Image (cartoon, rainbow, N blue to C red):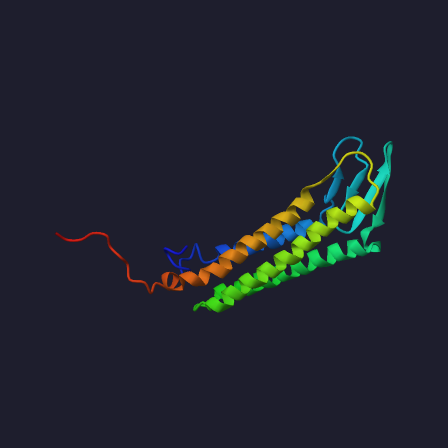
Length: 189
């Protein structure tokens, strides 16, 4: 990307595209029912960020209890949701920043800083949830934190990595804009 500059049409939208993928992963984590699931048969426990569902070992209907009745459930949901909203704001700002012909590199560094703040909120929610869930909710059988919880961690890791990219990109401003004179290693005899 640095070699060809951000005007190179295939490279210009890589960072906003990765932010968009992070937004999709965040939506999957928020809507997914697989934050916690039973690991072995019979499947008697399933939980999302919003509710915990159990059923008897013989099968039957799922009995769901809202996690919003607990203070830690509200805290986990709120902090993860704030991190997700900040990620969506960063995605919108990145689209605006890369759509303008002349890049504002301080603006791009600000997006990186906001991504770090989003990562902090997301990680807070991702840590509160399993710690308090395993101590406050009675679990039967062997349970595991599952795919939707993994999508939440993937979103947080993407926020951190993309924050570094957005913060470090202005360091290569001259190379990106083509203001650096090329150096040749060939010398004439």
